[in-house]
Length: 79
Image 1 (tube, rainbow, N blue to C red):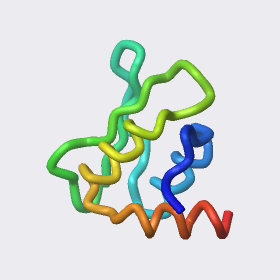
Image 2: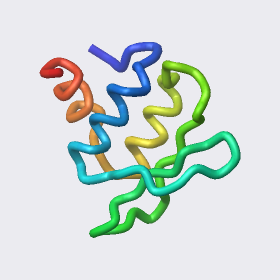
Image 3: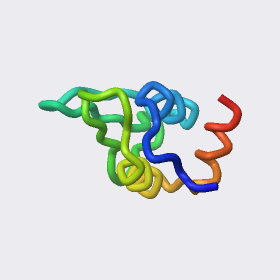
Image 4: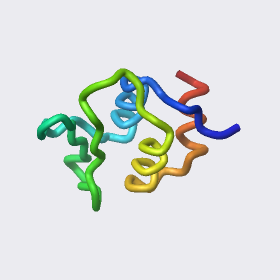
């Protein structure tokens, strides 16, 4: 099973929180997320508008934080 076409924003933010990644600030129409204890090489950027996050943004952000797609799919199954 692959990633769904979109994922609700609240679910993805909950996944980030489970990894210790928290909201840092808003800049323009985007929210910036990072891990305060172990900063990421690139912070996670999400648009503030819309209720769903497209698959390509999820894939890009998972790659940025170094998490395998399987870990995210397991999270979706359990939550």
